[in-house]
Image (cartoon, rainbow, N blue to C red):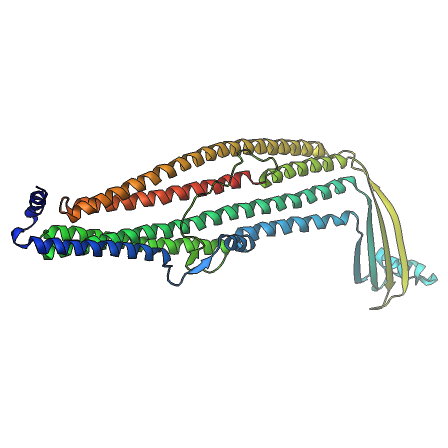
Length: 467
C-alpha cells in the first residue's frame, strides 16, 4: 500500500512508468538524500567560521573609546567648554590692575594748548608772559610719554558676575559629559546594527545553502523524469531571490561599518568585524528610577544657580564702587625726548544712584528667565520619567517577543524538516518545501531583530538612568 501511494504521488510529475525502474530510483534517492544532508551540515557549519573578507575586527569598548575621544559632537562640546572657561578668565579683571602706555606727539599754535605744553615741559620763562606771545604763539611742539594704571578695589557686582561665569563653565562640563553619554549610546546602537547585519547575512546564507541543496535534488529528480520543469524553475527563482537578499545584507554590513566610522571620526570605507557576530540578550539593566544627578539635569540646575548669581550682581550694582587710578608722564619738545616728568594718583568713588529704573527692570527680567529655567527643568524631568516608563515597558515587550520568536523558529525548523523528509518520498511538492524554508528564514530574521530591539532598548534605558 505504501508503494502504491508513492507511485500515485510521483506519477503526475512524469510520463514514464516507475515500475520498470523502481529499484534503481530507490537506491538513487537514498544517495541523493545522504548528499543533501551532508551538504546542509557542511555548509551550515562553514557559515559560522567564515568572516567578512577584508574585515577589520572591532571591539565594542574600542569603538566607544574612539568615539568619545574623536567624535565631532564631543569636540564641539569641549570647545564650548573651553570658551566658557575663557570667558570666566576674563573676569580676572575684577582683581588685576589695568596698565596702559601711550606716546603722543603734537604741534599747535592754540594759545591755551601752547602755553600748557610749555608748562608741562617746565620751560616757562618771564618772556612767555608777554601778552603778544600769549595771544599769538608760534607753533609749539610737545612729545608726551604716558603710563596709566587702574586698580579695582571694591566692585561687588563684578564679583558676582565672576561667580556666575564660573557656573557657566561648570554647566558646559555637564553638557560635555551628557554628550559623551549619548555618543556611547549611539555607538552601542550602531555596533548592534552591525551585529544584526552579520546575523541577517548568516541566516540568508543558510537559506541559500538550503535552497541550493533543494535545487540540486530537484534538478536530479527532473533529470530522471520524476519531476516537472516547473519545479526546477520555482527553485531557481528562489535561488535568485536569496542571492539578491544576500547582496543587500552585504551592503547593510558596509553601511553599518561606515556609520561606526562616522561616529569614531575616521575615514569611511573600512568594513568592521564585530567581536561576536551572534546577537544575544543579557538584561544587565535593573534600575527603573530616574536619577536626580543625571548630567543634563545637573547642567540645568547649574544654569539656574548662574541666573541667581546674575540677579545678585544686578542688585549689587546699587552699591558704590571704589577704584584707584594713577598716571606717570614725561613731556619734551623733542622727538624721543624725556625731559619733564609728572605723576598723578588717587581714589575714585562712584555711585549710580538712579539709572531710570534700568537696573530694576533688568532684575525683573532676570528673575523671569530664572523661573522659566526652573519650569524647563521640571518639564524635562517629567518627560524623561515618561520616556523611562515607556522604555521599561518596551523592554518587557521585547523580552516576551524573544521567547515567542524562539519558539516560532523551533516550530518552523521542525516543519521544514518534516516537509523535506516527505519531499524525498514524493509526498509533497516543491512549493511546499520552498515555502517552509522561506518561513524558517523569516522567523530566524525576526528572532534576531527581536534580540536587537531588546539590546537597543536596554542600552537606551541605561542612557536614561545613567548617573
